[in-house]
Amino acid sequence: MSTGRNGTLAIAITLLLALMLEIMPLPDWLAPFQPQWLLLTLIYWCMATPNRVGIGIGWSCGILLDILKGALLGQHAIGLTIVAYFSLKLHQRTRVLPLPQQALTVLLLLLVERLISIWVIGAMGYPAPSLWYWAAPLVGMMLWPWIYVILRDVRRRFRVS
Image (cartoon, rainbow, N blue to C red; front, side, top):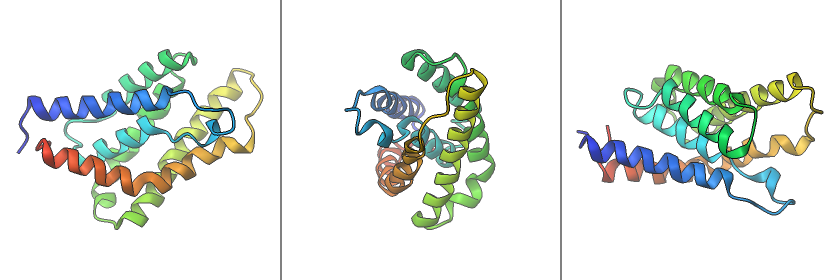
């Protein structure tokens, strides 16, 4: 059972840590490989606790990310909201899959967010990013098993349900 306040605090702290990792500056050569930490964390919490984390949390995290990255207001918010929606719709099917198959599902969700983001970039009239733009979802897919295990441990330790 959930311990209420501790569970909510654990979710909020993991999302804040993911947000901090998301805006952490990296060298130019490593920047295209920066995983989508916030989105990966959001996907986990949507699948693990669909009654606590959902579309509203996704939208709020996206707005926060837009502000911190200086992006067009709503650019990340719409992507995170749509991915949160798909995560909620697929959570019962995805939770029972082995981790490698979950990683493929997560890759599709990460690609959906990238497609939405590139659509917004194109609508603003900016040139399309290079092919390295698509490296982050692949890195996120490879990191998914570790992120899943770490966040599952946090969920069990703080009895978040």
